[in-house]
Length: 178
Image (cartoon, rainbow, N blue to C red; front, side):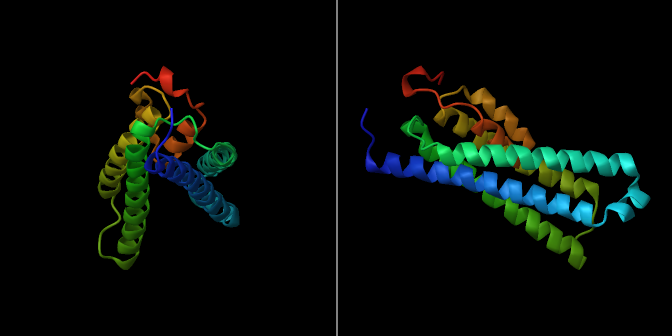
């Protein structure tokens, strides 16, 4: 099957976009882990050793997953991605990434400025909005990779979900359960 230029560009952009997500998620986890380790003793006194160690382990796992996903994504060229679903996946992954980063940054700035209160209900709603965007993005990404859209349910993990999907092998175009 011959790909047209638009499908080829969408495939390359989606491959680059998911690699960007992997690099971003790895960097974010690294920055958060560094923040914990730089204040390790103070955090243990404040929150207790179990909670701090759980976060250290969680961010270490996130860094490992991000690094593995980044390597996998840079080694793949996207030749087995389904051209019919690649453009939609590209749009949805890009939208999810933009919404996630922009609302996260704006929320942190607004809380630090005192514009909005730092309550858990606001961030719970924001987390639900992020999850909806990531679930839709992961459904499209799973279809583009030749898997059933139910794999989009991993979108509940937000940014890490595209990393999880990147570990799935691309199926040949003719074997998709779409």
